[in-house]
Every structure is written in C-alpha cells, then in structure tokens.
Picture (tube, rainbow, N blue to C red):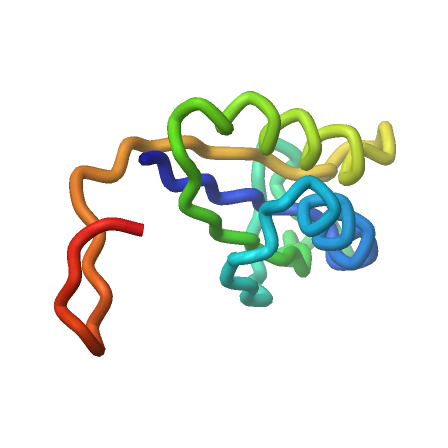
Length: 104
C-alpha cells in the first residue's frame, strides 16, 4: 500500500476527483491548505504571500500508484508555475477503527 498526497490548484480539484473516480479511485480525503513552493508564493508590495492549494490524500495498492499519479498529473496540469506536487510514500499498516480489522 502507498499513500499519495497531491497538492494541487483548487480550480482543478473537481476535474481531478472526477477522473480518479472514473478510474475506480473514489476513496480519498480532501483539505484546503495555504503554502508556498519553489516560486516562494505570490509577491504583493514586496511581501510574499502563501498560495491557496488543495491536498488530496489517497491510499492505493502499490500496483496502482503509476495509474493514480498519471491521472492526477494529466488532470491537474495547467502548464503554469504553481501546478503542484505529488508525494508517494509506503504505508506499513492500516486499520479500520470501528472493527479493528487490519488492511484497506
């Protein structure tokens, strides 16, 4: 299992979520965040301000990571600075709180 965090522009979230759902990856967590990457945010009057972003968080089988990453890239890319970043990390365990059952 792998955790995928996609930090993307808020205006492309619906497109990305729809594409992931069509591909069978509909279980995810979404939250709105502010931050800055390589571009150091937006400069207004000499001050750097954080950019609004949305984070999508998914746990998928290792065999599906490439498909999910490609789906996110293809649907989140605008070609402009600040399109976002995708992080992938292994997950050692998962447990359902209600039942205590291990696994996805």
